[in-house]
Image (cartoon, rainbow, N blue to C red; front, top):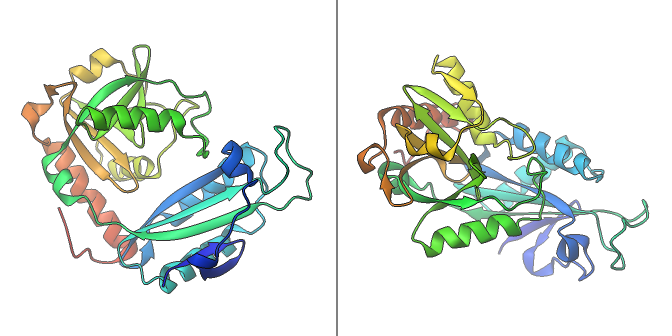
Length: 288
């Protein structure tokens, strides 16, 4: 039996109903988060929930529960579903109202849902690395909001998958932005370089945690724009995301990166990230 969160109640998934005129369904009018679970505990939940609130505020949605209440709901849901290693998905929409592009009246309640999923660590890919391809970034100009409007991301990801790649590295003209579902980082002469946290990218929680780790370990970390030409000359390339963690990219557009194997610094970053997970969630049973 599986349980979900629906507007403050944890109920059986089969009993959960959302009206067809929910604005998330019809307009993508809402925001979401995906939080990693290790050993039954949420990893970086405070950062994820703070971003959840910030994204909601950015599109004028007022949360009908406090962050503390939402966190408690999610912990109850994880326990109820006996999730040891997986994710919890959280979403809020502007609510249910007759279809109209304009916002409904302030009295219309929001819809907040959450569910869990068992998700293994992608250890083999993290060991061997993955392929990626360059794709023009066609998305809107508020990518810093984690909104439900993901069609541009989906099209990029599908094009990459059809080309036999794990990820699409998006770019606006010559400037590399981010992956279709990840942040992109390049390493050159021992320095990690990634796009600034502006409106053109989602400031990933994993990327932010990695930045903190690098500062503590005195590993050079720079947020600046970089180009397609620069990434083609990178010593190492990696992507970061909640579910992919620290993932080496060993080929871009058919060209090998670091002779097609994960680089030394990327491997060190993976080890440091695993240590951080264990600090928060306890010892990992499966490691890289």
